[in-house]
Length: 410
Image (cartoon, rainbow, N blue to C red):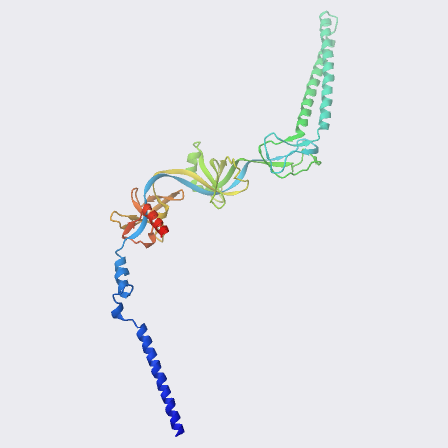
């Protein structure tokens, strides 16, 4: 009896638990199951989405875009090349006489002028030599004077037939001998003065002094090849570069007619302009190993932005496209088929047109050789949402500014 009672109690409990679970599941299903009757017309429901934002409605809406005008302008044609800055002149200053270097008047890196004193060699031996030659000159001038007086007396005696012809001729030769000696003395004095001047070492050109190669106190000689200092002229500066030989006809047309080609030097990254100058020299032959020709451009370099042996990007203006078709650079798009733009038609639809590009005009405009005409309107922003024949709404700058102001106010 006891066992039968226990089995009956366990069976009841199981039935109660199962009933509770069934009720809970039913409640959850009723809570989360979608009721089509209540939500079919509700905003935000499936019917609402189909009525307001479905593909059928979107295909009929105009896409907002920004536009730009196709215009004409004179577009310069540039040739780009990599160049190297070289000094317009480099001079290794050496001594032209022998002696001890007693004084150095420049500092390394200093800007020096032509004729500026750089160093001094001990001049005393050259001063003594000059004094010696000057003494010899005075002595020989006195001897010449005496010989000339004697010659004058001999001429009178010879006229009176009181002197032989041989004695007169001998005296004439003596005067000539002293005259020659005086000229030699004068030449020696000039050489001594020149050596004395060379003892004061000056800069032959204007430029910047390099590192000092000899210190004061050392002996220097005219045969030394090391020199005392190197002067580099950076104003003006030159840039050498090479271009492919296919560009020679265009370059020669200008250079051989005496014209100079404008050139602009940019830094190594090509982002910052360093100097403006012109190309005036072209090599007289093509480098057969590279198929290129070398040129040289000169720059005033007043601010010394160009430094010797610096690599620069050179942009050379080789010509100008007169009244070329120009579009905003933003309008130009690239694809696997080439370059194209979207032209806005009068009915506010767009047509995709393939274009042939030319050189750029600054950073904001692009020259077009064919594909569009001046006066047309092209899409500059909103292009990624367009296809051929799409309907657009052109947003003006005033509308964009007003929309921005409203957003700030909110």
